[in-house]
Amino acid sequence: MNGSVVPGESSSPRDSSRAGGRHWFEPLADFVGPAYLRYSFTKGTEQETAFLIDALGLEPGSRVLDVGCGPGRHAHALARHGCRVLGIDIAERFVGLAAAEAPPGAVFAWADARALPVRGGAFDVAISLCQGGFGLPANPAAPDDDSVLQAMASALRLGGRLALTAFSSYFMVRHLEETDDFDAATGVNHETAPVKDAAGEERSFDLWTACYTPRELRLLASKAGVDVVGLWSVTPGRYERRPPDLDNPELLLIAERVPSNGSL
Image (cartoon, rainbow, N blue to C red; front, side):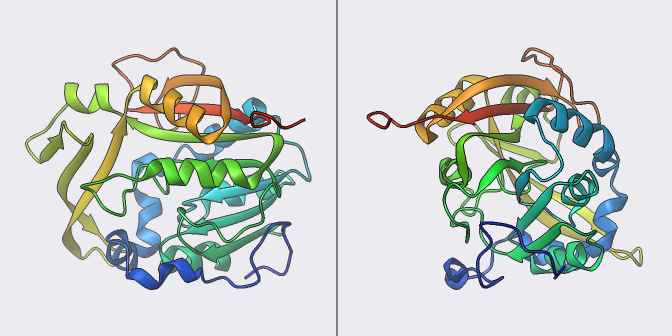
């Protein structure tokens, strides 16, 4: 782990909430390892980061929490911008990869997005991108992304902002493939997908993705105590302020933590 200290970091990189067993995503991360960064959806990191720096008002010294950071591509980019970043991921393999390549200002911890090992109000910004935390249900039969969003909101100072992407239900239903099994009752899509590791070996893994409509995201944001600043349709590597549509795979939510009812 990088020697820099980020305000709000837990004293231990392992979160005790993980005692319930491994997340279904962890074996996939163990297998794919650094080959994750070969997939096309990871190639737009610089454009995405530049957009978020502007949309979130990030400056050198800003304290950023990256929930579901994967191998650390966004955390690394933000640290190079001068931000102080703590990356959290459910997959120990990804945390190790992120820490090994970390620039100054970025540290990483192995933890569950639903029980973040951080102090409340310690961060200026929290992000969860590419279904690394939000949208990665622990129990596909009962998605619990509201707990992820609430944990992110609690980590923010008042006036702090969060950014998360969610897979669009509209896009998913419109572009269902033979390998997709979309559950209309839960909004979760299941697929069995071939995955290659760094050596080129291929295995099949079950993947579950929780999908959302713009209205659902607004309701979750309200429940978490954050005000929606922007809600746009985006494609990985092409973030822009585009109104929600049927043609782009992800929704990007920008929201700001506001005082709860009754607080000064």
